[in-house]
Image 1 (cartoon, rainbow, N blue to C red):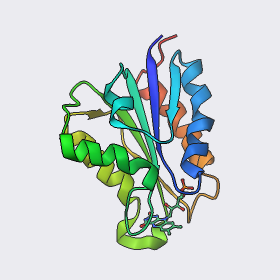
Image 2 (image 1 turned 45 degrees about the vertical axis):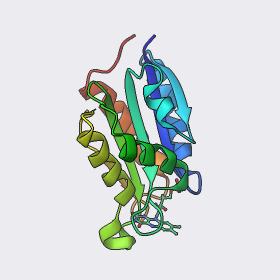
Image 3 (image 1 turned 90 degrees about the vertical axis):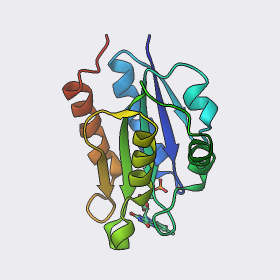
Image 4 (image 1 turned 120 degrees about the vertical axis):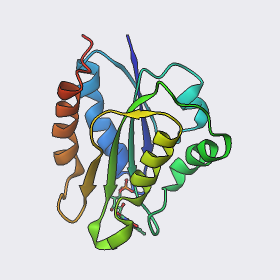
Length: 154
Ligand SMILES: Cc1cc2nc3c(=O)[nH]c(=O)nc-3n(C[C@H](O)[C@H](O)[C@H](O)COP(=O)(O)O)c2cc1C
């Protein structure tokens, strides 16, 4: 069974909740799913990752949540080649923060692409100003992502 890893960056737990809500959709699509809420580089590259989903909120002024910093620092510092990694990205933020809206998700996307990883489809950006329950946006997006990217394996 292929392995789908969900890498979470969260301060208050919203992004982790999204990860847990979408997990069954990937299981139904034929994946073994692991959620990493304190992800490290080894979680990403130390064992096969057939597909990755990054799900992160933004804190501070466009900053990564602390739980994601060990991974993003390691990516920055060691620049591992991520060619062959296919991923999706869910960024959570609040447009009232203006220019730093979804800053963490946007920076992570650039970082991954710069290392050769391939994003499948568009990034989802969930705006807390518009969407009270992030799951309401994330669940249909994941269903469509699996469908349009033909990710179903079972
Ligand atoms: C102190 C603080 C700073 C924030 N800074 C930003 C920001 O710069 N840009 C943004 O889009 N959202 C920002 N947010 C909004 C959060 O990213 C948003 O509420 C998100 O849904 C929280 O998800 P979480 O529960 O996974 O941490 C901030 C929230 C807080 C409390």
